[in-house]
View: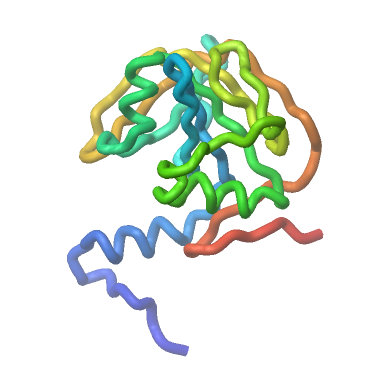
Length: 170
């Protein structure tokens, strides 16, 4: 068996950092928001709980994205948790080509309390208003105060691990 592709004495770079981070399995979500008639969604894996008092969560969004601009304007968003059947949805919302077509199909979502789209296929969702932000390199950590949530099904999660989608077994 060969050793790891990146040795401990090698200075980290973008490639080795991404490779190392890929060894951490994460759930898959689609973050959504709305400004006026513009509905927008983006696949996000950097999502976590922050606090129980008040109820806070965080997402991390690249500053150069449309999502960043719209959330900073709307001050509200939803995080749609994808189940194991959500791979195609995750891929769609991760592909920048989606920006040239309508992102949401009629009947595939409803509008939540914040005005953000709630995906019908989500196993659950949390809606939040922006509580605080922190600039971090080329991204922004957005902390949201949860104002609504629902667990729709107990289906297994969609997991992203080592650059691929996975499902829990057993």
